[in-house]
Length: 452
Ligand code: GLU
Ligand code: MG
Image 1 (cartoon, rainbow, N blue to C red):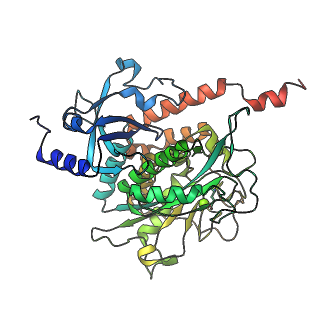
Image 2 (image 1 turned 60 degrees about the vertical axis):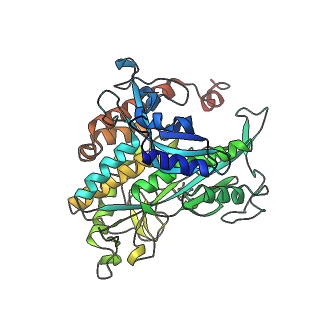
């Protein structure tokens, strides 16, 4: 019997076997929030728990196109391993894949046993520990939007928007916006996956959907948002479709947001953002949290809007933000305070887009809230009326390079996120920018080829 072939592992194996599971898919998020995984036959779970599954550390920073980006600890170190150990308390039976269960993995450097600096789950863990030291327990409710695409052989991308012909059937549910009942099937499968999915609807644009997850403690919410994105993509693939969480996939449609409902609770589980006697019905903590998010918004954009494409979602009249502002039940503001107070008092941070890595987005937001609370920062007056007036508030960074520069300059935020992590993230993203800047786009050809 191996060291990890313990009664505890046996108990999990017996439970899984009783559920008809013979494969455990151990999955962990890379730097951009994509799931990296390996299928482990159930009988080999004790060995995976004892030794960990070996993945090349550079997988964290291998681009979607297969570039191994030169980040410290990767190519320069000879492409060493990380060990990924199943977290057997985080197992979800896959309703659409008989015999398979998803299991989140935790990663360590086999040489030191320490988490690797790029590990998004460990980054969030570390930030939440800092919050806990200050008596703050972040609670998060994720809302994610995405586009669904059908295969379109012969077109340049090979895909076209699902329900392309649908116009004017927005913010609804049912067959008029979703002739193939994608949403119903997806909702039911996600319910059976057990990741706290609550509601769903067709979003503003044809082929765009939104599904809401219940709120919970920040790590649990990040785990569920991570699994949610993977699940929606898996389910679409099973039907020959593509679900994309990229920020703004089309010129003739709006973007996809990753709105995060954020509050804090005390050790007794009581909401600490509401206060009936405080200004706007918010507590000091609630106000300081808003101020921290506004103060660090340019740097937060790097983590909540992490792609070249992200910045095409921002703009006036988009329902995505453009300016660094907040408002009471105001959807044109970057931070909206929904009308509920008391145990439902919270901020709806509308900054993030759906392409963000849930762990990094929630870690960055928690760090900014912690800074605001620690320093007792006060927000300016809330936005009145419809926003998007650049005379009233500072503009968000309007490009990825500007956001990366803002992150690199935000020493207080870096102190909480850690310099090793931030350096890796910035190196990865600057490589992405270099590759983009060298690439000739369709727009350039259309704009220049004929007239010039
Ligand atoms: N799609 C918008 C965004 O990118 C949000 C629309 C809404 O309010 O639900 O943030
Ligand atoms: Mg929405």
